[in-house]
Length: 187
Image (tube, rainbow, N blue to C red):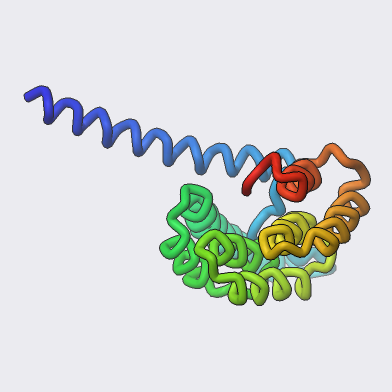
């Protein structure tokens, strides 16, 4: 009886932690700590008649539903990766079907790096930067990649790029990359 109760408590705790991780990601995204995925659907406004407006509203509602589904898939995949479930997280990111998105490519690169697949990681970081040359998190993570490869000079160059994009040395991406370069942090 006691073992059953402990097992149930463990399951409830795991579900609660998973929910917290997803909620924290949503809060972080809302606070600007994470680039939102997917891009916000845009509604078309213009000189349309009543019938055209109704069609636009219906399409807008459909787009918002699709947007929410993509957001949930992304948040789930991201939570898996940040929880250390790299293989499953990579598969979940690919399942979204938007590998050219810098957020998705960046997290595939991050998970690949954590798995020690440095060539794959490099490919995905470069894909993310090709999609968005100012994607600050990718510059930071790719800088960590260089630091792990022993290329501290390149990591320093990436740290400067992060500083320029952030506009300061207090942003999370700068602080973490600096810590990795100095050996005071692993990420």
